[in-house]
Amino acid sequence: MDQFFQMQDLGAIAPELELVAFGMVLLIADLIIEEKRNLEIIALIGIAFSGFFLFRLRAIEFPAYGGVLVVDHFSTFFKLVFLVAAALSIAISLKYLDIERENHGEYYALILFSTMGMMFMAGAVDLVTIYIGLETMAIATYVLVGFLRSNQRSNEASMKYFLLGAFSSGILLYGMSLLYGLAGSTRFSDIAAALAQRSDMRALRPRLRLSCRLQ
Image (tube, rainbow, N blue to C red; front, top):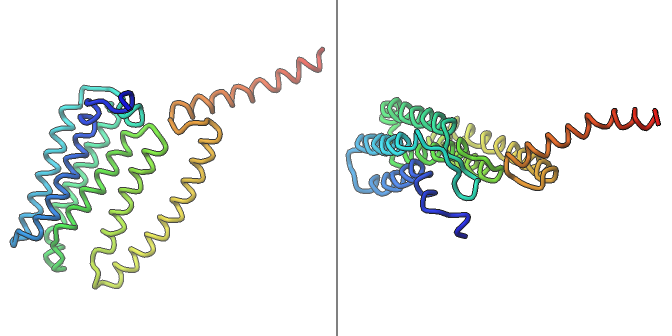
């Protein structure tokens, strides 16, 4: 257990933990705050805190949780893109939610949870981790698509998205199982090494056949 978890691993997922914490705060604040416009401010503050912790990790590169997650420039860049997209989504949704009279804390919390899933996907170097991040993002998005419960189009879109996501998730798992059977591991590095070795063996087969014929 000591080899899998270290204290620095908590720092690696600090931006994601901030989103989870503020998502929980939004769910509770929705019951307390009467002025629903303040919920948007809380959500934007949560994104700002997450961006702050992400900024502190910008110059650091290290694996976390036994190598299933990694902090590097690639993941940091895309996490920043996701945070900016989430902030823009929240900012442009306020007027629409007021018109539809659906300005609830759950909406902003789901956006934060969905962003958290995408951020885990950006830093994943393992098939299981990337699948968990994908499903975290997808489940929150299913609910967001059908957030307008009184709207038939919203309900229809949510059901269609859910069915499409269920089928695509099953196909993705099938492909992952093939990769695991090929490499015996879910790590990207192990899968890449197994595929490279397999391609080298295929390249050697014609040479081996030619040498056997010459002998």
